[in-house]
Amino acid sequence: MEAHPMPILDPKVVAGAPPRFHLLAKPSGSTCNIDCKYCFFLSKEALYPNEKHRMSPATLEAYIKQLLESHRDPNITVAWQGGEPTLMGVEFFRRSIALVEQYRRPGQTVQHTFQTNGIALDDEWCTFLKEHGVLVGLSIDGPREVHDTNRVTRGGKGTFDLVMKGWQQLRKHGVDFNILCTVNAANQHHGRRVYQFFRDELKAEWVQFIPIVERATPETIQLANLGWRERPKEKRLLYTQEGSLVTERTVGGEQYGQFLVDIFEEWVRHDVGKMYVQLFDVTLEAYFGQHKLCIHAPTCGYGPAIEYNGDLYSCDHFVEPRYKLGNIHETHMLEMMASPAQRKFGLDKRDTLTKQCRECEVRPLCNGGCPKDRFATAKDGEPGQNYLCEGLYHFFTHTRPAMQYMGMMVQKGRAPADIMGWVKAEDTRRGPYAPCPCGSGRKFRFCHGTREAPPLPRSAAPVESATEVGA
Ligand code: SF4
Ligand code: SF4
Image (cartoon, rainbow, N blue to C red; front, side, top):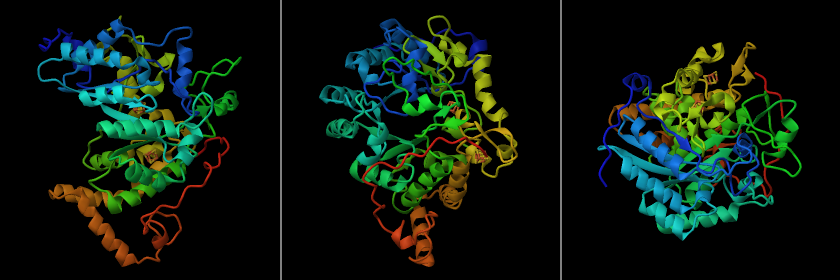
């Protein structure tokens, strides 16, 4: 198919717009075929009551056309998300790929990505995904014991077996996949075991961890603790980034850091250069002043979300009326990306840092984390501190010596994987009965000195009660 000519865009708009951005598209809105307890995206259905949440052919075409027109960087990602995108059926995505080919300009390279809970993946889906080189993100929270705590069907049953069937299909067809794992109250104490499960049993090579932080107010906490799905005779609560309480499912700040450290200590001994853990990768890049992940970049605003009807929002985590930029049927996407509102959204990330963050030794790596999580108070009582601060600080300081070593290797033109020899020598020097460097309090020999992480409890981890968030 012939490539599309360069569109004529207003140079003033183009000058203020980013050369590239990562737009998450929600073709079925927030509708899903399962009912994960922590998924506040489910509540976003309340934004569009009484509507069929399905992207129309006209919106699909406008979306693809504008996305390709908007990019001055030749590398573009068409990212499908949900809700659950498989609800749209394969034909919808065939059409989207045909539209990309129709509107792609000379020199533009397009990567298609697809985030799914994996339940609907069958031969037809996987044949299609493989044929078009679609990169699949599979959502799974670890082995059955922890996955089934929150990732459940509408009837409340665990979805582990259903996801495993989808994973088998991906493997059978050789589809490229990543793992997206949330970190929540059920798996927060089992980082290493969860990681080993992905590496050894799912044969994954790329993993991303996302902390679950569900905010609530004293008025909404009770309902929020029940989950975000629709319940008979009850008004659905619309999740917004408000309140300084957190739900029972939310990961603890300190626990989030320890979860990451637990995995890092395993990775740095065995898997550098073989397994890609997103946060480890982007942290190493941050030592070179590069920030590919918005969460730890100094500013953001390059990760908007588009709803099934063409409404564009500042970010996937801020799909709420205050952050709606407009609709692509009325205003060009590039114009909205260049708008003062969106630029302010991105710059506020830097401009609202607390004094504690500004003076923090790991600020160049952390940058205060995502604004959605900044609802705690700083040590001096200033509001707007990141709820996960304690864990973020722990992670960035704990990993610093190893990251600096890997950075040195890269500067010398050597592989970061050389770190594994250095760590081994350090382990030998300390001896097997010294405390494990992960900080668990156990002796190294019985902790990260063994290949096997401690087994998971038979039932999921105990649920901790909602707490007011302080310094
Ligand atoms: S608000 Fe958070 S998730 Fe959204 S773009 Fe900014 S850093 Fe990224
Ligand atoms: S570790 Fe805490 S204080 Fe330091 S930059 Fe991150 S959020 Fe701010």
